[in-house]
Image 1 (spheres, helix red, strand yellow):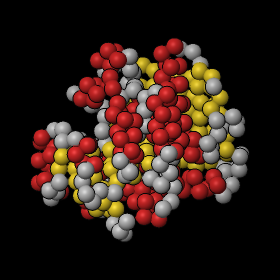
Image 2 (image 1 turned 45 degrees about the horizontal axis):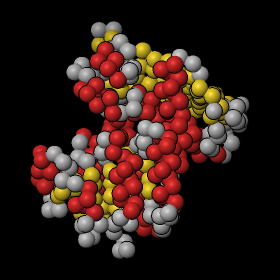
Image 3 (image 1 turned 180 degrees about the vertical axis):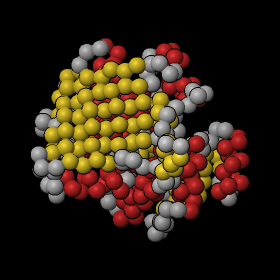
Length: 339
């Protein structure tokens, strides 16, 4: 392979467009050579904004592209596993947005196939691992700065959406834990060095978006996970934030504590007048994790160029899905789930 990794992207929705723009001009070592979308207006966007001439309607057409090295999947969750398998069987490297799948049987099937393709990099998109704040926290843990870690608390807040646009996609997302909280679950697993979960309990409410009742989902939820190394992790996730997007983590050990992601603002400015303060919160996850998306993409490209394993494995994605599924089961049953 040349020093450049030729990538084709599949999926040009809101997140797909951002990935495509990054791969086209902002990721050293990457070259975006083709794009796929079943939506005509998205294919027109790719031609107009990315300058691509190889634009297809299906993944199968993309895989016939003569210069393709890797495929970047930003598609509906229900398609992830099957599309990863198709790409691996074609001999290409593959990056796929989270989650790997909505059930463990399918996760295990993909892992079994990937074991037969050890020379190909297969990576799932948990970009928060590449954020400077979370990376620094992981380094400090590894250096023993907190002593023995025993407590983690994570929160993820999505800005409230008056139109409830996301509700139409909720039936295929796997629910709030698999769709949103899974980022925090992956981070916690990373912080505890892959310790095994022992018990999970979750609860939630559905007030702001009653339409979620049709798929038995909630708009606000919390969960606790006990790990076999003694760490107790708690999670709060909501789509109802009035202060903007926020993703935070607090870590507590026997010799110190860390707080990641607190008090971030769209503009580092506090306006004061008439005995009031005004702070502009972050509008979305792009504003919070723009750099992390770029570093994540570079890590994928570097692994291919250097012949190294994926920096984030399919096994990691499987274990995160296992915990998220247990949270969903606990939410539905009202009972703890033990492993």
